[in-house]
Image 1: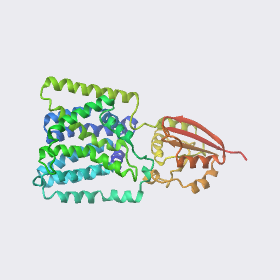
Image 2: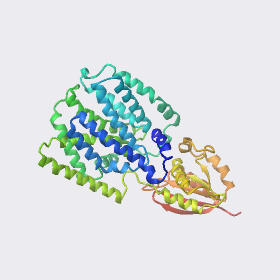
Image 3: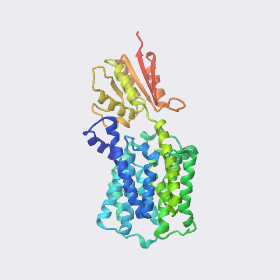
Image 4: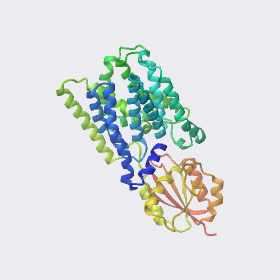
Length: 429
């Protein structure tokens, strides 16, 4: 999410409250709504564009990630623009359109690695379009995109899959959860309604099974690839290296609402369309309301309370160890809000250098180094992350607990949503 964090770096100069930090995601979410309308209008017509924009606005998954201080709405916005300029380049491959298209796709991948799957899908969709509709210069665009995102490939090779090692292999439940989330957290009824709307869009063109088709039929295949190919490809890869998380496919949401909007737009009578839309909106708003009562998809760890508890109860000379390296990021944020104090614990892991860099969030524990450092501290804090719903501690947590507990009188534990904070005190010898 390097692009998002770069933008957030400058955004924080305007304010750093929790509300203001989340506002950056809201800005991109609001920009996505008119962009989706334009994409729907270019693919179909203004009627479909308006319905799709309305469905997106009331979608609980969209509302949920519009308030997340992460890159998901930025990725969504850039992916919608990518689809829009992809179509523009097919109709008018002018130098301006092609430059904007290349730039948007490159930025999308820097916003989130998985946006690269959409770039691949757009290329694949051309194999189903009549060749006469494909400009000759299109291949050059992919080469420029590949060159622009090559630093990402280098970064992945150097870093490896370590930051994603905690992801589990997906099963039927994860796919079912993704379907429920994308359709708006409204349960089986809303999922059924979306399925019916999508089928209404596809049934009239389902009989046209030719490999290459005209633009009128191709647009449905384009949306189907966007919606399903990315998911199925990742599930297949996940048997070798688990990479599947429902939120990584947040950018499939535009394809879903556009397909559903196309099906709903076939109801030409206002007397049929109006109550049908109201039914969708009612279920969607119910899903959004239930989100405010109980989080879904990504459970928020209560770093605010945990950090406040740790910093207010720490003593001078204490040390601090995080179970997951990324946990240091929210801790440092709340630490910055509270301000520094003499009692602030010394972070032993992750600790790469005196100044925090991205390496602090991707490295693995050096147990030998920790074993040499721990005897210098009378008290050591351990923060365990991602504990909600887990069957037990993972290998890293077990190793850290064993290492810290070997020379202590036991651990005092305080639990927070998604987090355990443990305090180990050295045995008096």
